Image (cartoon, rainbow, N blue to C red; front, side, top):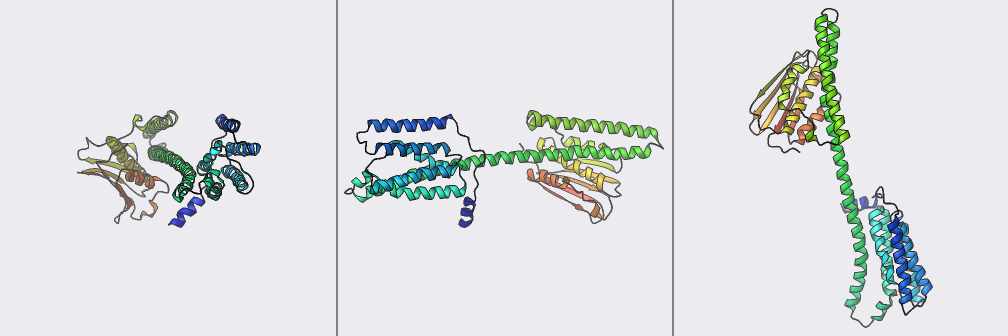
Length: 392
């Protein structure tokens, strides 16, 4: 488990779209450099002043690349400090400038904007430098006679500052990643919802248009009047389809919430009995008290019934009748759609997303859906949805 987590952290890529360098970065460097110069001017001890100032300026300049190249910035800054502190131990008698505290921004940048490998390598450089700088610190060397507990506290405090900076960067990175993931999941849910609406609503109407057109062509020669009536039905169905398409496009363009978009409900299931307009016959039976049914549950029942009827009309071989039954079962609602097609149901299963979409709709409301061939022939879709579901 731990090895898997560490492997995942090691393989973590850089976050996408890291911020570019802006005027605030230059202002930060200008403040640090100006502070270094001012501190050096006001300080009484100016030993090795040019070299001390050069180190401070170099560390400040690395902050300009802390987001675009976090490991390189940390390697240059802490590598310079490592060499400087080693020189202080053996050769140079000088004191660091307070503006060197800009180093604390680099661990944050490593874990906020670096990859897993970069963060690990940079942290290794920092941890290797910390004991060296503690030995090189003249104030630490001067406290030889101080009890060891205070020296331990100084070392622990130094580590804590830099580790806290790294932890802060990792925390903000995690929250930013979680927010991005939530946004992507919301977009995915919207795409899936749109795909279901297109498939269930528009697909249903287009299938009806195809069937009616086939019937009209068969009647054109023998019964022109009925063929003309079929054309009128096709026109009405096409107009309804176009209206639903415009509603969906308007929702996408205007960003309107789903509550403001007209949606079908349980009462519209009755229209399925006459919306097919051809063979097989569709009978609808609704039994129970559904006055308090939530709108979301009504939409789901209608869409599942609509898709089931479309599949039966389009795929049920030799079917003469499709029965749609909605029954009130106290705490739940049962929807059953059954056709009397051929006993061999191997050719009935539609090759598409209809069954997937119906199962998704039922699952989103905490219900179940089963679909398959009957032993005596035909195909049955059985959905059970809880009444007390809370929809948003």
